[in-house]
Amino acid sequence: MSTDSRQDSQPSRRRFLGMAAAVPLAAATANLTLGAGAAHAADSAYVMGYFTESPSGLGTDFGLHLAVSTDGLQWMPLNQNNPVVTPTEGAGGLRDPFIMRKQDGTFVVLATDLKGTDWNYNSQYIHLWDSTDLRTFTGYRRLKLHDMVTHSWAPEAYWDADRGRYAILYSSVNSSGRNVIMVNYTTDFRTVSAPQVFFDAGYDVIDANMTVGVNGVNYMVVKNNEQEKLVNTRSTSLDPGSFVPFGTPTAHGGTEAPTVVKSLTSNTWYMWGDTYRPNGIFYAWQTTDLAAGTWTELSQRDYTQPLSSKHSTIETITSTEYDNLVARWGKPVWNRLKSYNFPNRYVRHSNFAARIDPYPFDPYTDSQWKIMPGLADSSGVSFQSVNNPTRYLRHYNFALQLDVNDGTSTFAQDATFHKVPGLADAAWTSFRSHNFPTRYIRHYSYALRIDPVSTATDRADATFSIVY
Image (cartoon, rainbow, N blue to C red; front, side):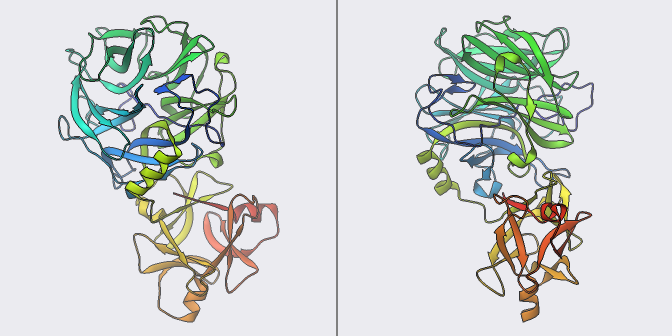
């Protein structure tokens, strides 16, 4: 569970799933069990589950949201970033969803039984759904994990081949008053064994994420809830009590919700973490050696999280499953624009002036744009505001602002731009003015304008990524 608004003395919890390399996962480790379940040789894309929160709550929703990706780094929300299913029992909402492909190839969804931030809501249950394809969800139920007067936070699961059962890990408070990682075993996600303490670090820990069977070693990352860092642990067995911390803790601000995933086309491992200081930003790290226990942070240029996403889960899927999910839930009708040299900032309008601001912010809809055929030239583009649909980005005295389309030729030309390969990076995009073709959209002191471009700084200021 996210701890974005919790007091320091309160137990925080989060698990975030991130994904693989800039190249699609393939079959190189098809026999490994990677956290949620066995990797499938045919898998070539990814699905992410999450709930949503935004700084003032405008984008907050405690249902299951889905996004897809072909590289595990750039994510496309489905269903216009609306939930695909929402709990109807317990608290009536979820946090911390977890999607796992079971041994039979179908999916199970687990989630914390909590809506909002009432950290004193002590549910002994978790939410569950079954799904054959993540297009329909059946068998909704709550599963009771224990009889303690405490919570069942951030459930995750993995297949324990030696036991022939699935293990459900989650965070609960023990008799000493601190969070530990608990485990229940199940074969059907309908009945479970008695709870056991799986990992007790001697300090408050939450958000366990398991990677099973790497060169005979099992790895689990947890959040040290007192230091707000991600801690590596390992064991040569999956027995409760056998995991031991090692290596160097990882953090970027207050970091939680770790997820470790391996690229199936390289020897690179990725770990994702969700932060709540500042709130709701995902960071990613990489290593080529899990046994080393050290992680190197990636640039935010390399990945883009779904809008307003919190506490994510990621599972690999086939290309057919990817296509079917997009067909069922639909692509977004909007885009966002990420700055190249300030990749934590996105183009938005504020008081009708265009600028780049750090993500996240509200109204989050200020950063959503419908990229339309150019008003003056259909080979170009115009940017229609999502939350002010009568208004478009246009330049006026070379400054970009959001104005109502008055139907004039001048407005149409001022609001039309031509996409060209990014001036600082050809894999990105720059936008040349239609009626001032020597000028490009760029930011200057974070405000957007059209200017001639000559220096390396100019080129970086004028380069953007079209994302969701």
